[in-house]
Length: 161
Ligand SMILES: [Zn+2]
Ligand SMILES: [Zn+2]
Image (cartoon, rainbow, N blue to C red; front, side, top):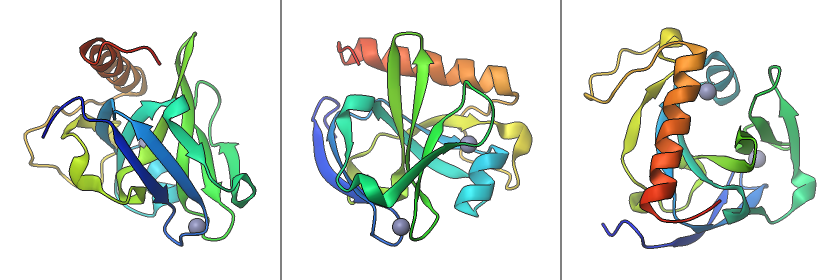
């Protein structure tokens, strides 16, 4: 697929009550094995796509509650008030820029998404992964790995968040 094709599509939580629009290029897709993702997704890991924050907009702000599940710097996670499942999250990755973390399964068309760059928070993994992607363990290493991938992608797309 073409790397710089902007995606304009709608997304929603599992129950469909909380909807959002996504416009622009996905920066990084990754698989997160952290405990919080396991708890809120009720799955062994989460498949997550990062966009610039301004690319993702809630269509009905009332349906979503934002909360942090650990001390900053943490993802401010938008949870659907109806199904209690994640809608998308927002996080500061650098002092000057915020990113949206969107579960791939919440996007209507996941065929347009890039391949995952790797597995992070792998020290928490429940399922052994055999896909050959990099596996990063540890909180700081996982954050660093993602930040590097985000900025590499920003430079590749020649674009500021
Ligand atoms: Zn919902
Ligand atoms: Zn996680």
